[in-house]
Picture 1 (cartoon, rainbow, N blue to C red):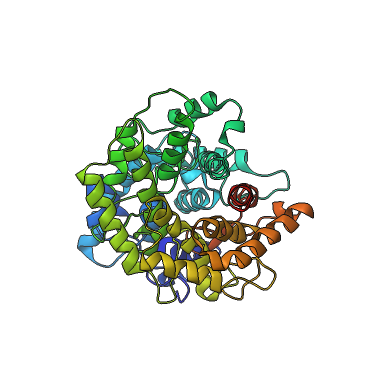
Picture 2: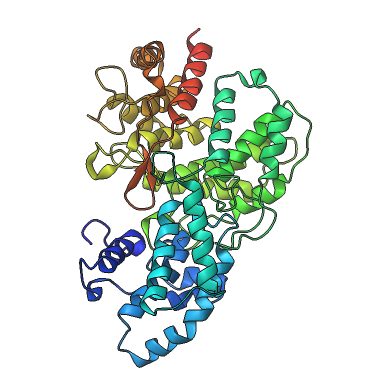
Length: 464
């Protein structure tokens, strides 16, 4: 409870597992209002859910197993939950992807399966063709299919769209996109991943991208801007039309009242991972600018107002030391697991792309990055943390564009750090900079390679 606070997304599943194992009584496990899943999907953001928007399966399944073992004494609430049990299970079945894996993730899918299975066992029921049994069967199939050879499971199974667009955009940053073979096939594949219908899970409109081509992926405001930027850059070489208007409208429609952009759903905002994020907002700005500047679009008044408000949000979120904090990335060596180097580098890219490098916010952000460089020439997630390839490459890439002439020496030391890592082969060693759910970390083996390509390619162009 001290670690997760009011966010029940992960604290309740952990406590639920302890209760199932007999390690603690059920009255220590907070109740979850699973009956809330029965209201119209468009009302979810008004219901003040105790879990984040993407944790709806956990709300339903875990909420039900808690209610089964610890029914509420309030007769009205008890009636509502009795009435909502079967209907919410139908919702759970409806939003389960064809692969069986919610979010294509073993943790969330496991929580759902063990909750439903525990209720079935407690009631001494035999498997039948109920929604709960079908969810269990498909969930188990997903878990069996996703286990690794050593018997472990990854936190996430597939980031195909995310790492593809990162790779394309890295080659573009390096000025080497024309060396990419089969660009037409790549663009066709990427555009085919654009959602065509309202998403059954979050209710997201059509026209966006998730992190994976697999069915459990959910459209979001990091992968969609990344896909837009990649598509625009690929289309400079390839004459192929695509539904840029849907992508534009999807991004525009996600802007929150605070003028920032959240990950999945507009207007939830109660819990940290549903709030606006500075890195997401900067990514959205860059994508909107790229769309408006492309042959298919024009930068109209709506674009201008949206972008201006978004920059206002970024200015308000800048910390006193000049940094910005990202939403989905962190560093375990930094206080409170923050990663201001990642966040600042990503936000500064929006100031660079829209020619705002001379603003006070941009200058302060650049000064922050220069001020937290390590003696070895690299960067960690924050001042005094160990250098990593990922964080060094991100800092170097943006500083090559925005650092003042008098700061050329520290930028060159950053380039030299990356060159050393390439020459000794350690540039492929990934660091766990990614957040997954609340406090689970992951690394992606392609991150250091992709970010290094972008940074050193940029260095060749800038320092030659």
